[in-house]
Length: 224
Image (cartoon, rainbow, N blue to C red):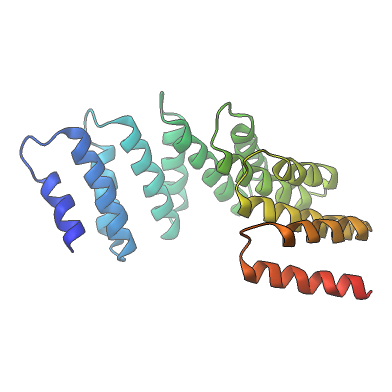
């Protein structure tokens, strides 16, 4: 309540700097969303997006967040429109463009547009200076989709690229190792599968439930 009150005080303050008003609206929208007020969340994001002269960073953030919220409400067309607006916005921050492309790719894939999905992932992967987290997510997701399309070599290559990516987030490396191990096992390379599982288990910081699940599968493979 205090958080919302402070953001509202900035928003309602006569003559408050536009940048601070935009930041307050975005943050108030995030807070409203976390409290289940979807209409209020969408209204705050829309106010930033429609604000003449609002800082581009806040407009892009509001569009990405509004796209996510619309997706949670089942508004696929609205979701795709918001992500596309970020992607097509001249000078939009690279981080928000990368997030929008990954999210748009996921949405396209879920609705049968595999070519569009792969194209969005490729754009992120090839984007100079894109955030490592988004690159890693795009590679993992592209690997999964390639596997579903029967492109096993491409699938393995994408997982390997994540695993070898300097500074890649631990979560995505762990997922890539497990997925690569599963794929290797499906191709008859059980020693490769075992090796990938062992590498994942030894990684620092991996959630314990992940380790337990993979260890159980590893033990089963070794017994065979």
